[in-house]
Image (cartoon, rainbow, N blue to C red; front, side):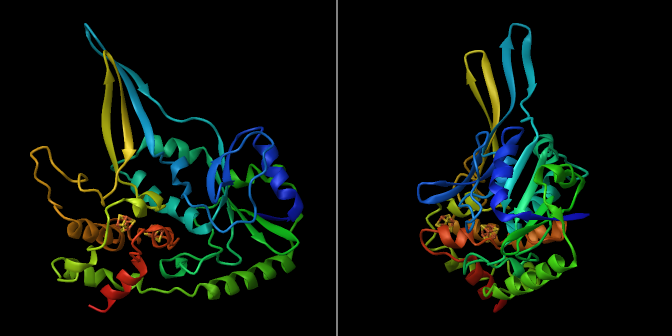
Length: 340
Ligand code: SF4
Ligand code: SF4
């Protein structure tokens, strides 16, 4: 694995130049928010920012995606094949928690019994460049409680660490290596590596929000019917904001839209917070109230994902904590469960 030192003032220009050669998605200012979007050729991305409001999962698992097109003819249906998004993509400025979310999504979309070609096509063509959190941006960050770290390289192809005047660039995978020339710089030495280690330890210490996320699985196994679930959900508005902003939430719904003889099959993000989520055609809903829906959200992230894949389906980004309009805080919920 090669490590190089890049001068700080050159980084945005390097990415802007790459945007003229391939699809580059990066955090950009959008009124009062920072949002990931596709850059124009030469456009420079934000380098100094906390984190984007939207998780970058949208570029691998779009909010709305056409799966196939079809036409009804006198001789039956004619299918136009799937609508995979092509093209090499550079996903720049991803925070390590969000990069880690890709490895959790891989577990679901890339299983032996089920491989999702739409997700995998984009995943294979995407190079992830992460900007390490040398100063963890929010008091709501809790990546260290769920297996992550401010300078984690999980799910990352190129990891950039701010050393002050320069960036240490680590080209971690063959996809990352393929862009080494484009990033330029000079070879890094032991001094930079040591500096990074010190920064990594300091940054992890700065994550003050710590929750017993890894301890609640046996409690959840035993407490499906606990009275705890009767009150937890009461102020939830079922708006779905928490799930739509979450980098690991991945539930979707598939529907057909038809106009005369032509139609498309699309999949859209869905949310376990919505009353219609598990409503069956008969009218029966096995999760009839927000109580069952909130229990599902907690169980899915901290129990079922652990059962299925050996990992907690939360990377501790804190988006759901910051954006919930009624201040429902997953950290407090986990802490309360640990006391049951
Ligand atoms: S963001 Fe808050 S109010 Fe909205 S669905 Fe999630 S928990 Fe409920
Ligand atoms: S559950 Fe909340 S803190 Fe955890 S990954 Fe999702 S949005 Fe981030």
